[in-house]
Amino acid sequence: MQKIQMTTPLVEMDGDEMTRILWADIKDMLILPFVDLKTEYYDLGLPHRDETRDQVTIDSAEATKKYGVAVKCATITPNAQRMTEYNLHEMWKSPNGTIRAMLDGTVFRAPILVKGVHPTVRTWEKPITIARHAYGDVYRNTEIKVPGAGKAELVFTGEDGQEIRQTVFQFKGPGILQGVHNLDASIASFAHACFQYALSVKQDLWFSTKDTISKTYDHNFKDIFQEIYDKDYKAAFEAAGIEYFYTLIDDAVARVVRSKGGFIWACKNYDGDVMSDMVATAFGSLAMMTSVLVSPDGKFEYEAAHGTVTRHYYRHLKGEETSTNPVATIFAWSGALRKRGELDHLPDLCAFADKLEKATIDTIESGVMTKDLALLWEGECTAINSKQFLQAIADRLN
Ligand code: NAP
Ligand code: MG
Image (cartoon, rainbow, N blue to C red; front, side, top):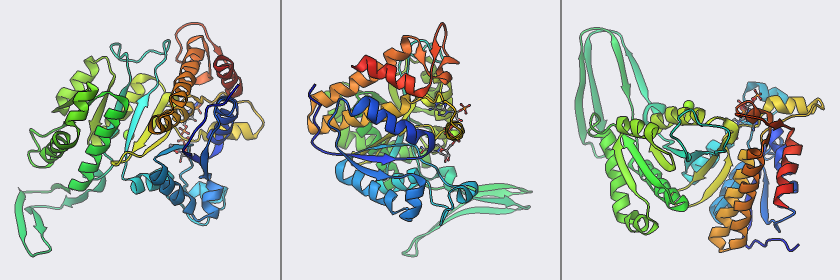
């Protein structure tokens, strides 16, 4: 059989623990037999990040800027315990944080649906993707515990000496006080990433804030989105037959629960934090959640939303079999290969990505799956280990 050809390399970011093992198996069993795989390989496994003093993470983000599409394995974010476990030189920052900052990107999280695992919300038939703004608001706040009576003011002092001053509240007794901020540039990047992503997956984009109450702060988000939409994306949305829709957060919540799914919901930082946990849980399992980082200039990095599954890895090291779910990591690969195919006009590569996803879903829907899914499954099924599951998918692909 002739293998499918690629023209531009994918940026491949290898990772840690159980997902690193799955990574190699997915490549060997599901991709290399079919695709003449071209990647530029970066080892983001913790030992190599430490050896390179984290330079490899920066290099991999630069490569993503250069080539446009990356696929990433889950990685350890070191804490005190990892410092000893890996004898690290430093407590390196989260690679995802470093890459997100360098690409100025927004993270989109979407569940993978299979028949047999039903969302808790009965009307949901298609995935709901949450786009969370990743800068500012309450995550960069300044807080004061007000000790007693006194006046709280909001003061802005411009570099040109201009002063803007407003009374927040005249306290008569103790209380609390909080200052938050955001940046037009960051909101604009978020908006571009959302519009780009909606176009790339051809789904409607919803955006919600509380602009009726927050008439300046939240309203600024709404205005920036609308301006950018009208100027840069309206025509493309109409051509693609998709819609941009702004509504109040309360209305959005009610509509989401009544909806069939199949759209992107852009949320401010706090709303996105809370709503992504709600949506993920209602869809079923973290092991079935994909994650894509999209930069405002249209660079894409695909990964699974879960971590390195440490508990399973320690069992693996003891020689025990594990039934770790590889689906989100497989979909990270298929997403990246499809995007590469679209950008390079390689229909065979796009078709392979579709087949790989279909073989994975069909395998599960035939009742063959890993243990975590078997626990959620309604009806008869066979729970097998990771390797056997990958083999079942490979058989179907063949
Ligand atoms: P985790 O790796 O997502 O695993 C938490 C638990 O969820 C697992 O113990 C397992 O439950 C279940 N689970 C997650 N993914 C699964 C899968 N594919 N198949 C089956 N079960 C799965 O989170 P964590 O244990 O909190 O974090 C482990 C490491 O991952 C940490 O070092 C953290 O820094 C890192 N992390 C990385 C990323 C990333 O790179 N994007 C994201 C999150 C965390 P059972 O043990 O009950 O089976
Ligand atoms: Mg959260």
